[in-house]
Length: 310
Length: 271
Image 1 (spheres, rainbow over the protein chains, first blue to last red):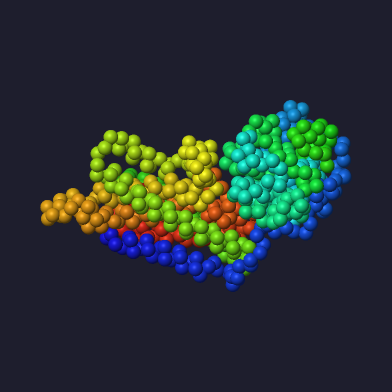
Image 2 (cartoon, helix red, strand yellow; image 1 turned 90 degrees about the horizontal axis):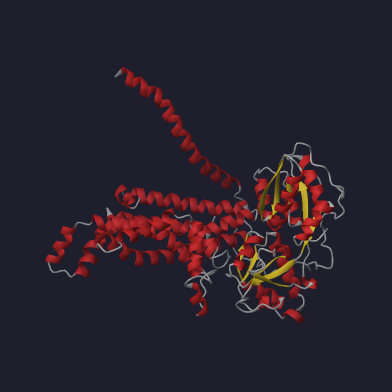
């Protein structure tokens, strides 16, 4: 009675090994392409902060800066928004709910790419605010978006290190230091994409950043997170030596725990945030919310939280 | 009697429909997943394939290391708990069971507090130049933490069922205590040990929450299959996520079958 168990356990392991060895069905013959290491592959020259990002949605919105009134009687508004908007949007919701009786705003914050996946799987929302054009386009392509997205805010990258700076990061060039524990968002996450673009720009300046900078930084990445707040948390906890987040993420709450190390404008990347009503959502509420964000009050709050006007 | 029979007859449809509802609820997600995976089984991109193979390799390597640690350290503990009365035995028993009911996120944060860079022990390790977080070692530690109870419980039950008279007979015939253990106790306790090993391995293979919190998500060092499923899903690569899910589903089915086929005794030993 005892031995069959052992033998069967062996059989299970053998079977699994066999499954792995024969590989997955439908897989093409494997001759693993050597290059394309996601972090070290730099695409065509990335756009520095000085130049507006190519292909970004029209910065001059037709929604215009004249705020639209919220429908009388309020209603429930569900907003899917990039994680970096968390603090600013929560504050805006408080303001709006106080000013409009019966209005209730609910948020779902996360990595923009995760929100797109959720929308694809049928999650219900009225507004989608993405941290980059790529994910907004993905949402449009899958039919989740109603109307044309407009850029409502911009953001910039910064390096954060724990307050005691265990990795001794004094400038962006130190990101390539041997043995530094660097945390980035995954490459599909907008801030992860922007961070890689920025590192690529640094790599283009060998005089300042040294040879093989991009590869050295790639080798330092110890963990890839699903949204920008997870990157910040790793640094706040002191588990990572450095992380790349948005300027707006370094809020008053975390200022005591982390120190910012500036990324110079020449190698920084401007993040453009598009926003749009979601297909099947409440169009009136969505339009009013987007209008408020584009209007003077919304913009003032966003700036207070470290964002830049479009 | 007729009344009673009528009662059961009226009850029967209710019982059956409730039972059927639950069975459908359990079966539907699995079936749907297999169905979607079948539909999505186009050729994988080389990039996705690399992620899959790396994740599978990491899962096999880390769960292998985990099982080695669990068996080497878990067997003596199970033996002690089954055979010896010692002060605090009940406390140790509870402690060993705790990770089974503990949410993985709690396990993750607890491991960080102990072995993280600013953790109780991690602080000293860090000063000595040893880093645990973000390494493959952290993956193994997280797996050991959550898997050990499954092994120890089953192994303890296995040891408890060994007939003491057989051991005594061996001792009377002049076998040393060590020889008795290796030639009598251990072979007789093997069903429990094996069932425990299978269950512990399954738990280690599925470990996600503590791993992602404690070991991070690094494609080359810490991204085991569950982490890769999560990562691929949110990268809008449903196909890869489903394929990995299929492999894990297959492994889970095999684990249950192996425990069940090997005899209910051993299977129920730990649970």
